[in-house]
Length: 332
Image (tube, rainbow, N blue to C red; front, side, top):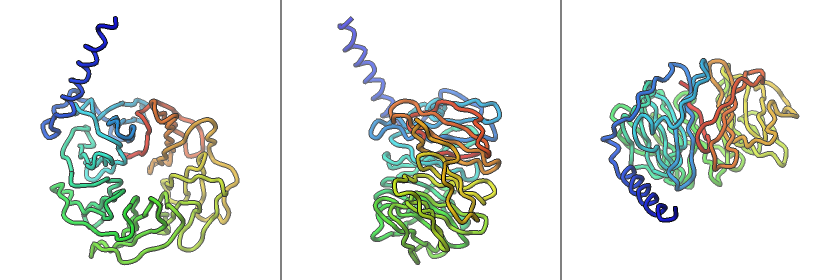
């Protein structure tokens, strides 16, 4: 048996090398998969430097999940550390952080459309009412501006003193951008001028932004805060993700469990809405239509993660396996 091991290893290595060297502008999909009109994409980060990021798709009506969707349809792996996905006009923009690129797919079929390069370490992409796409970056010290019509980077907005930019929310002609990595700032960008016009100091490492129905901006770090008031979390709290329900009147966030906080409530709840127990809750998504909750359990960061689906009232509806380290959700 030992004599066969080197041969098998060589074959696998050659096969992997050939796959990695194929040009992604000439991909041919190996499968055609029907995607339900209503569902959600799950962006699985994968392990850093392993190139095992993946994309899953879940149909809530049938409870069917498609694993490794990008590879099955397009014939090649997604890349190294998938960060986020945004849908704009039936196109899905998938940010591949450590690969320095964004893949564009048809959100109706999952098929490859285009690749956006020239990026350092892209994190999130946001499409403004002015028609531009804005791409935050972990290391670049700038926000890239994308023309979604031709997929070209048309310019950038420098962020001196703030090399790492993360999440974005738009209010009127202002784009509010969190500076996450070892920072404590929300940048304010004029989308008509495409330049930073103001900044707001908040707590260390703002982990999430949410806009409520009153057009109030909420920021999650060691506090939940907006301009008018703040709530202190427990000293041992580890807040990580912030979302808002479909009616935009209740915040939802992770902190060793899932917590809910009505925007008009003057005190913090004293116990979580959903207990974490022995799970490792890593990601959070809220369906904008029915406010159902999707929670990603990274388990041990090595094996397939698990997604838990709950109703708006906390009833468990489903659970299913996904890729390694489910990091974010994109609802279709």
